[in-house]
Length: 111
Length: 375
Image (tube, rainbow over all chains, first blue to last red; front, side):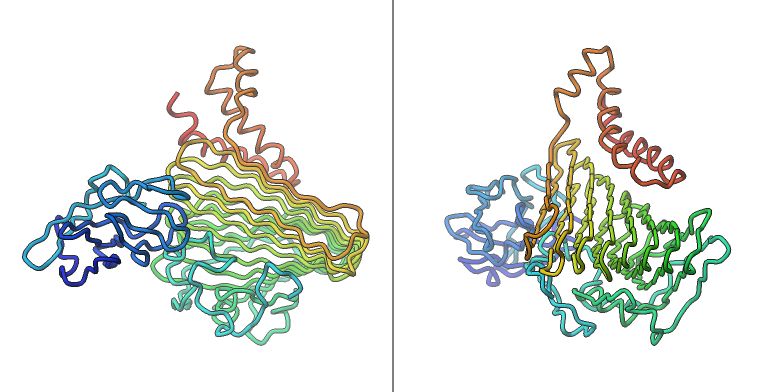
């Protein structure tokens, strides 16, 4: 399948991720300045959508219990989550963000 | 509803909003995998066929939506799926055991699903007449997206055993509600066995229509990688001098195996002299599994014989393994023996010989997938 268009750069706010569905995979697209990230849209703790939480300092926060995940590694930086979330490769092409959900870049198997 | 842990019941679908996953009764269930059973999926498919093998004397018929047999257990849907099934069930089976009848062999009902791309809904009512003795076995096979309600009415002084076996293929989704009304001095045993399916959730509830009744609920489940198996039990002690005993045991193996057990017992003010105990045990066989276990008790009177609950979740007991190893038993064999001991303790309480033997075999087959393969 390879890279698919996820959304436009303008869709992604600085402080909140943008939820998209690519194939069967729900992905949250987030940014840190001009860097873009695609993380599975599912907290590894209580299975809620990460796209509803805040993004700050290259971390995405789960709105329900407050676990934060590093957007570069997918690893949680605070409890209660202890397991990382799958990250997908991202390419910015022009004004659009492309994501490849067929592989992960942090070795986490999407759940 | 007197219970603080259960939503109020209603037959009206709109009374039960579409769950978001944050509700107490839905918080463990992966709603996205329910294939719309909890929202508005069409339940009109008829892809689950029933085969019934019953001894003489058992009255089996299909009844219409307006039959008084529906609701005769006092069942009122407490969630959206049960309410939807109430209105949309394509078939309502009525299985009647006449008063005083003593069946010499079990009633076997095999439900075989043929297609999981469309959703089906069924309703069944099992009625055991006063002072009858019977065993009814429900076996689910094949694959399906099924929501079903089963009502069970145990007449005064009757002794009824209902065994429900979810032996689905790996891609089935099954949400079942079972509600039992236990008559005066009646004895009811419910055995719930879940092995297969992608997502299986059973809400099993019981109430008492008169004093002196006794309920035993036994459960056995085995979750493999990616499987979600959830059991929610509720015994409502609505009459004095009644008994309930709930024991569920499960094993988990493989990445993403998830089991949920939520038990609750309500001891109402009227329920003096009752006795209740509920317990859940989970054996976690590999990494990557999650077992949630929540025992509850709501007590409105202290004038009772006893009430208690227990829950434990753990991996192999090193001391047990060490003991067996010290007796010259190989590692693999030792693990197998420990799991067998764990389940056999429960299997021998079922009291239906045909079922007991096949369950021991199934446990063995499940173990071969993981525990016994890598050593």
